[in-house]
Image (tube, rainbow, N blue to C red; front, side, top):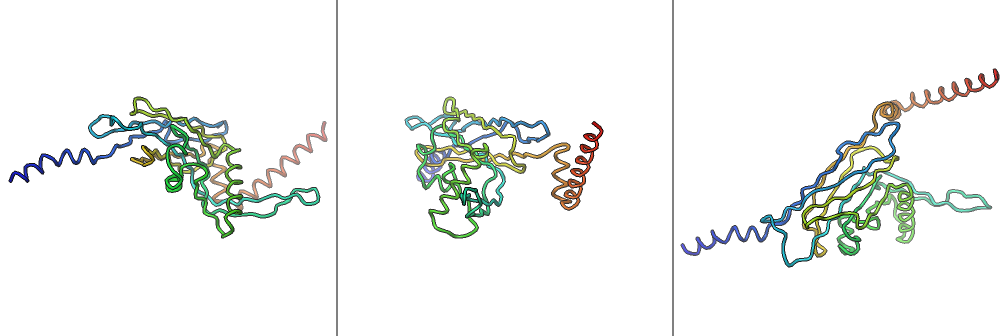
Length: 254
């Protein structure tokens, strides 16, 4: 009887000790519409860390926050150029089945100081840890060269971004980070995933979704090109011919 009473009294304490912190994240915009005047957007990611008992653990190192924003995956071909007889021509190429169309990571410290290489690979934390899934097998050196080319190309277009130190944590509870969405961002459903990390271990993770879509005339054009590609192509050719003929007629009159 006494043993049962002791177990009943100790169970809540054991549960509290075993409980893990919880992330409560949010984003400033769940829907981003692209119109003709769209020049990009600033996405604010913020939230709170709920610790068991409502208190920040004492005597432990401060936790880190890592935020990853990913766009829809897509198939992409990377071509390597080579100079032949003074002319740059396409040489080798490699196709990737599923590369993220957009990838941005913001962290409270440099990601290499937060987690080890294995954890970075598991959660795809950082551009060097992306799982790009090449469509054909090749040597590791060649694959690494093309992967570096893909990352560098998207980085130059502001589609791949790393922002160490961009996450601000207040009182070990509240956090926020800003990520720029470029004007040429692809449309689709994005995910904003937040990780709470301490001593190299992921303690909690949470995801929010963001929809980026075209609006107005841009949406009509995109739908027409996708659903009626042949008709869209014919109309585009006719418009080009019409504008060319009109420009020539005006020039002749002048």
